[in-house]
Image 1 (spheres, rainbow, N blue to C red):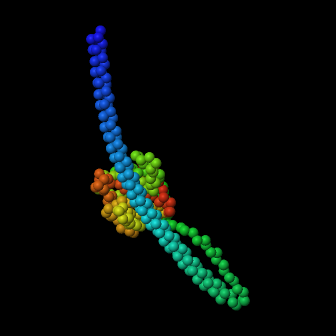
Image 2: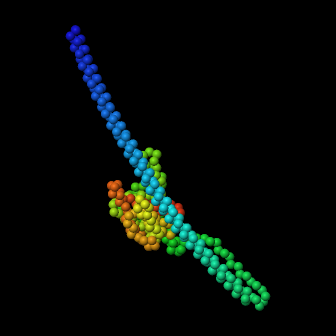
Image 3: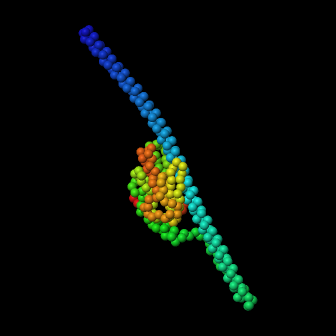
Length: 275
């Protein structure tokens, strides 16, 4: 019995030693896992900081582009309105001269009878009217809503219009004033409708852009390197207007920034291009 009891105690002792060894190994593994988790967490925080910094840089760049485009379009409209007012003033002066001549002629013909007649011409209220060509172009552009060709030959929408949540970071949003279309490297941007090139512009660090006027509508094509058209040139639908920038430091990402405006109002391009 003593021998059996001694053997049993020895077995229990061995079992306890094995359990203690196993617990020690588990503790070591847990410590290693915690160290790895800490390294991963530190790496994620570092990447998150970099990602946040990249997002802020992209937002700043997008704001610079949007502000530049908005200023250009506002200036174009201001000049058009100024030109219209100048034409109205010129027409009014010509009407006054014509009225004065008619009144003088009337007074001369009625001087023998002693009567005097004054002709009153109602003044027209100033109103902006587009030229016939601009009106027809606007109507044609508007009539093709939802059927306009894409501004690239091949591609997909990589950034949608309006406020969008970030796919990775919580509580991070972007407010896109247009859409981003990703396309194969060395692709060209093309006009979605016939019109006249009114602007070629550039933003430091954001490449170049083109604005095409279609009556009271405008389309904007940004993030271009080479531009194939000049200001004042008439372009046709699907005509190539410039080479889209390819970012060699970002997996050759080639992305066009595209906008549609109606006068001073910005529109969602997704509702205008064909699906």
